[in-house]
Amino acid sequence: MTTIYSSATEMAQALSKKDISSVELTKLHLDRIEAVDGKVHAFLHVDSQGAIAQATAVDAKRAAGEKLSPLAGVPLALKDILAQKGVPTTAGSKILQDWRPPYDSTVVAKLKAAGVVILGKTNMDEFAMGSSTENSAYGTTQNPWDLTRTPGGSSGGSAAAVAAFQAPLAIGTDTGGSIRQPAALTGIVGVKPTYGGVSRYGVVAYSSSLDQVGPFARTVLDTALLHEAIAGHDERDSTSINAPVPQVVAAAKKLDVKGMKIGVIKELGGTGFQAGVSQRFNEALELLVAGGAQIVEVSCPNFEYALAAYYLIAPSEASSNLARFDSMRYGLRVGDDGSKGAEEVMSITREAGFGKEVKRRIILGTYALSSGYYDAYYGSAQKVRTLVKQDFEKAFAQVDVLVSPVTPTTAFKIGEKSNDPVAMYLSDIATIPVNMAGIGGMSLPVGLAPEDGLPVGMQIMAPVMQDDRFYRVGGALEAALLSKWGKPLLSNIPELGGM
Ligand code: GLN
Image 1 (cartoon, helix red, strand yellow):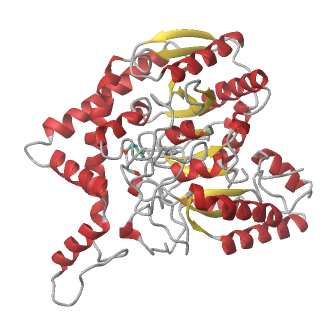
Image 2: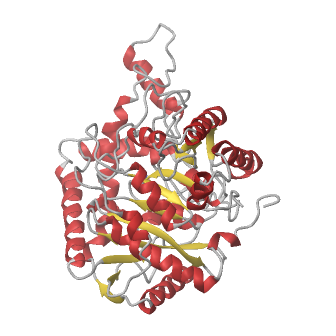
Image 3: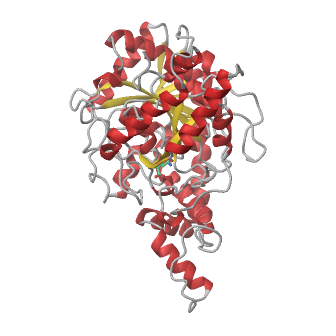
C-alpha cells in the first residue's frame, strides 16, 4: 500500500498502476503537513489549492491515457528561493515579504511540465546565508530527529520536510553546502549537481558563481529521478552547460562499485571531526572495499584556505546581487511618507528588510570589493579558488570519485552557534571546496553517530559533468547499508506527536 513512508519511486509506480490517484497522494501529504508542521516548521507557505489543482490535472491526463513523465503526480516541497508564478517567494527575507513572482523559474517550469505536484515553499536562511535556518526572518525549522536541534541550512526546510515525510521529494540550492549539509543532518540524500547542470533562471541570486539548484529525497534513485527532471541546458542562464545531462538514473541502478578507485581526502577528516562521524564514515568505506572498490588516500593541501576564500567571494557577489532590493522595483518599501527622497527610502527599507547576517555579508563584500582592497582580498580569494580547483584535478587524475564526511558534527542545538558566525561557517568546511571548483557532490546517510543517535552523511564527489559517478557509488553503498541494517535509516526517526 502506498503511504507517506513510501519512496517517490514506489509512489510513481502506484500512480501509474492507478492504485492511488495523485489527488489522494497529495491529500495524504497535506494532512501530514497539517499534523506535524506546527512542530517542524519546514514550510513558509503551503499551497493546498494549487497542489490539488496540479494533482487533478495529472490525474485527468492519466485517465485520458496520455504519456506521462516518471514522476508525474508525485508531490514535492520547493525551497522558497525559487520563483513560482503567483505563489509567495520570500527567500526567507522580510524584504521580499508578500512578493508573488509574475513568472516561473526554469526549475519550476520543468517540474510543472513533468507533472510534479508542488506542495508549497520551504523555510531557509535569509538569502541562503547560513547553515541552520536560524537566519530565516520567519523563524527557525526544527530537525525532525530532535526538535531542539537545527536541520542544517540553508535549505533546512526542504530537508526537514523530506525527513519528516511531509514530501518525498524537495528542491534546494547549494552555494557552499546548503543541500549536502542539511541532507546529512537529517539523514536523507541530497545532491549538488555540477555548476551549470541545472538552470539558475528564476532563482534568487546569492553568489552567482557558486549557486546551484539540486534535489533532495529519501533514496538515491528518487534523487536521481528528480535530478534528471530538473537538469539540462537553458538559454536563459548564461552559465548553463550545453551538453547532455549525465545519466544519473541509470547510474543509481547499477549497484556495483567493482574496480572503482575511491579517494579519501586527508584534509577533510580526522582532528576536529566528531568521533561518531569518523566512525560511521570509516565503516562505510569498509563496505565499499567489500564491494570491490579500492580506497586510496589523497591530499588536497589548498583546501585549508577554501573556507576563508569562500567568505570573500560569496559576500562580494552577494553585495552586488542584493543591490537590486532597493524598495523601488518590487518587495518591501518602508518610510515612503512623501517627505523623503528615494535614497532615504531605500536606506530605511534596507535597514528594516535585511537581517543581521545579510547585512554583515553586504558590508564584508562591499569592503572586499572596494578599490585599494580588491587585490588583497577578492583577488587573493580568486587565486585560492584556482588552487582548490587544481587540487581536485590532481586528485581526480588518480581516482574516480572522492569522499569525505559531509559535516564535522551531527545536528547541533538551536542557538548553539547562532551568536558565533565563524563557528556556524565552519560547519561547511568539507562542502565548500566542491562549490569553489564547480563540481558536483552527493550527501548520503551512512548511519547514526553512537554518541547521540543522530544521522551522519558521507560526501561523494566527482569531476565536472560526471555526476553519474557519485550516483553509482551512492546507489551501491545505499544497497550495502540497507542489507547491513535490514531497514532504512529513517525508520529510526522518532514519531512526531504520534510520530
Ligand atoms: N553556509 C554557507 C553560507 O552561509 C553556505 C550556504 C549555501 O550553500 N547557500 O554561505
